[in-house]
Image (cartoon, rainbow, N blue to C red; front, top):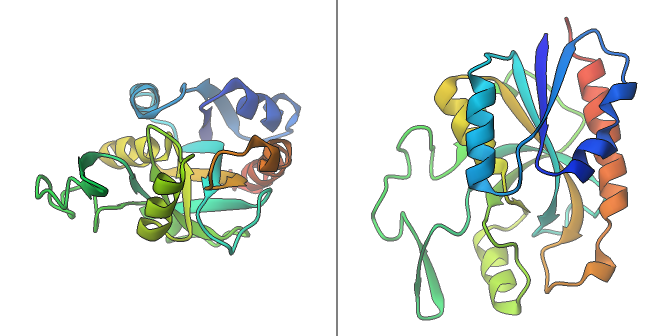
Length: 212
């Protein structure tokens, strides 16, 4: 199986220690860069190579209580979290503005769902996610996203993977390790190293168990 393992940052890629894996699969690693634009461009290039599977692995924030920093989940559906307009203290997305249809392919109910998860069972919780250009860090933003996206993962590249792979019919899976709660910015509470270690073990275990 030809697998592409893509991360946004060098720190995430180094943590995976792919060079130490003893895998029967052909594994290519790729750095997409940070943000939707960079990730979209890079993942589109990867799709042209027609891999059997693209795995995106990274860390992210969490808007819920069911998972703790250091835990790993798989994203079953992702969406854009900050595309729209402000109306005084309210945020209106493109669906509120009636600029888009929530079911316009590849969206289903505003989400980019992963259909390739339907045929497997996974030892990790499945969670929804939203992708933003600016991560949460103020009380106003935190409260809005908690209300709009309860029990969601926050990242800066996930929706790019889902959108591009769905458009190109390339199987994909997104792993996210929780590094922090979505809260007023407080780096002292972040568990980045714990998240990276958990991410390494989860992705490695998943890949090594994949059939040929």
